[in-house]
Image (tube, rainbow, N blue to C red):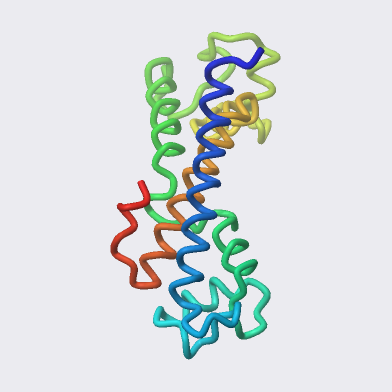
Length: 175
């Protein structure tokens, strides 16, 4: 039986993928003005940067497959694309500050209250100290559904950025 968390994250991923596919198809249909199943730079009214982003195989034209591929790429690094990741990192940072006796923004083995095997696993650089970033990466490794959710949110924000590059201002109508 699937847990509610796994179901909701799976449903969310399905929903986001459906939305991304619709957005890619809508964007393709908007720009393929002569309906020849490809978009040339002359048909595209967005920026050259957006065209290059969408032309995933760099052949000088955008097919529907290119558009879908572009909408499924790893997220761009944008200030808003890491909101959930940053919230988790801040939460771990706050937990560290609660136990950090020497105020070095990390936990050594004496400050850590868990099992030694967990300390060793989290301390990825084997420095003898655990940072908020190490806690976050370990948390995401131990919770792949949360990591997948963050990835999907990053992808959604990448798509909003791509729409912004194309000059679309009605992205709110998709959500």
